[in-house]
Picture 1 (cartoon, rainbow, N blue to C red):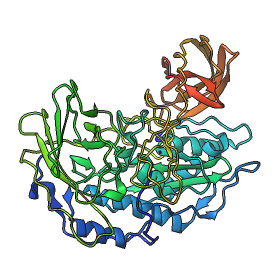
Picture 2 (cartoon, rainbow, N blue to C red; picture 1 turned 90 degrees about the vertical axis):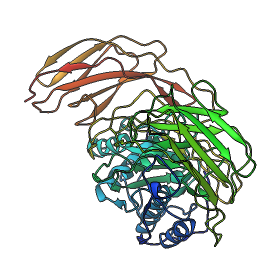
Picture 3 (cartoon, one colour; picture 1 turned 180 degrees about the vertical axis):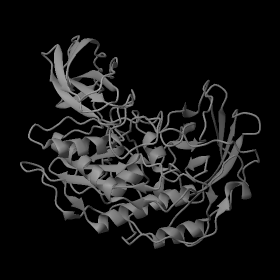
Length: 527
């Protein structure tokens, strides 16, 4: 699920309305970095921006309207205080990364994410494809299901877990085993094409379920590529040892040829990464999570990043004239002085990449964003499904066969507020096999689907949509494990219809979904 977490960061900032800081805008190529195209901000500029756009990592949730989680359900609404804190933190990290930092809240997106959080809370399960609570209004559920499918989602085990923890130590960390291979949550947060977003959360005895809208692509003028995390000047409060390093190039990268060399200037320590051998974790993902062509590496080290640490990054094998080099300087937001100089990376030409399709993120995992000094528990995150067209604010994206558990692994520093436990520690349950639809019959708008049973399935889901990406007019229906057929009602439409099924098993009260099976296509006008 996007929707998946789903960490620790600085806790001293106060809440404030979003204020845009007019600072110098220097492209990476104007510094000593090469092969990337993002804005360069000095450490003092970053400190000033974060002070003006204040937000605390441990800001708790407050509501303008309290959610109703049983009986006559109501999604509720986050307070302006909480929403302003979340969007300020969101723009802080984008400013640090050197991409557009004027993302705004959208009421429609706030409604989608708030309702998504409600549905997941009622179900007690983190999912980009939540099942319908039996007593919930159909329209309310459909709104929440759509929101869950188009958002990063997270879960924390305690009440009133703040949105900013999910953002920094969940979605930005994204280093748990379920998400580290693609960092989908992080890439949605750092998507240059985003112009609007929304936040929602529901909290209570079941913990805290939160969501951040991810599929907005309305910043059509965005041209940034080479988006790095950690950035060239990186607050240690926002990055921990468990966080993977990443660079999104905006165009496909060949894992067979790319090589990464990471050098710590302080002591000359070197880590090398390639598909053949790596001094830690290494992968390349070309899925459309905001920007494709993401190079992912995490050095094997127990040493925490500290103010004054300086690392040189050199990436080769990207094609003629496209090698990348830049320097990462770690510093403290609370320190009034620069601790290191600007980067000293080698020159290389920059690629002409463009942002890509929207991703396939996965749902069920809990966010595990890792931070630098925070409690032991971390939020869980899920990633979003991939979609190739420009996202709409409405239906759920298609789920990719990936993490169904939302993410996070993070450093476990000791800090004031406990952190959400990103990804579950329990042993993974084997996914059920794919469901095969054998045949179908249609009568007016009613379609009867016949399918083969899956061994050890606890139940099934059928989804149907007017889009092959299952992101338009999407409906999802639960099916009993005893059935071999089910009936769906298609909406009035002159468009094609697409239907798929999947099975799930239950383990310790949680559902583990298999992959969606074969697609049947119905070319018939529904009147």
